[in-house]
Image (cartoon, rainbow, N blue to C red; front, top):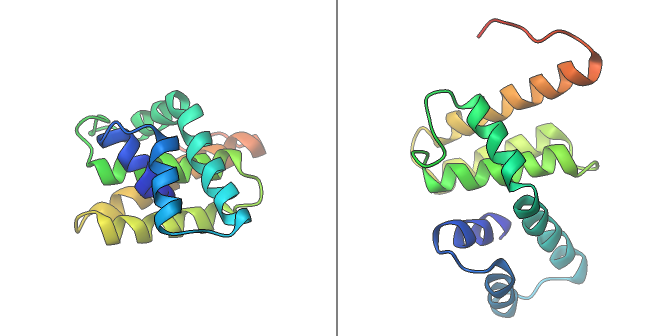
Length: 137
């Protein structure tokens, strides 16, 4: 649901609050699920500039505009989960993002999303541990 809301906001230029109200009306959610959905969408959009910079930095041959709309929004959501939601393990966020990419993207989307998220997590881990980043690549 969060991916669909981010996609509607990005591609359809729909305000996320309106899109979410319609979506939750059509498919009611338990309160905790609705709160998490709102946190995920709102947080992703609040940190969009920083998230997009990370995507751009790690997708050397693809600009955000050239990237598939599905891949771009799946990456945004997963990066927000990895960077800003402490109780979501990076591996779980990556796995979920790859599954969404396989379902909604093209035949290469899963590998593309996995590759970029893997690079970002490795970089974050090396910064946290104080280990110099590898130059291999």
